[in-house]
Amino acid sequence: MAEDIEEIRKKKLLELQKRLAEQQKEEEERVRQEMELEAQLDALMRQILTPEARERLARVKLVRPELARQVELILAQLYQAGQITERITDEKLKKILAQIEARTRRDFRIRW
Image 1 (cartoon, one colour):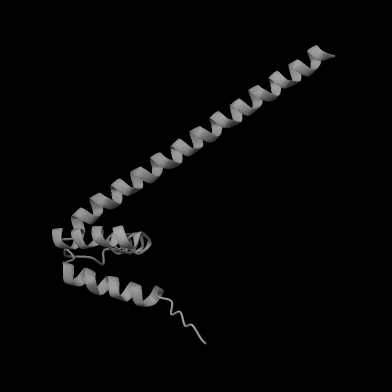
Image 2: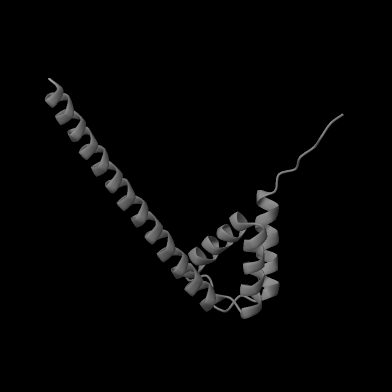
């Protein structure tokens, strides 16, 4: 009886270890894909943004990472669709940021 219990424990432990290893593999794959996407976006931003615009986007990324990610994805889509024909300057990037900010901004009102 005690031997059966010990055998069941060993099987359960092996099963849990196997599941943990699979989860770690999945997590590593997800992180690798995320890093690969980040590298592709960075390379694309180097192509379509002027150095000044890239610096601005980097600063925005520090303060509002979700806004910067949204801008990067929109620019990537526009580039892939062939709608971006020349490099985006700092002034154009400011306008794009303002437009996206205006669309996503929430007004909070506190009433007394």
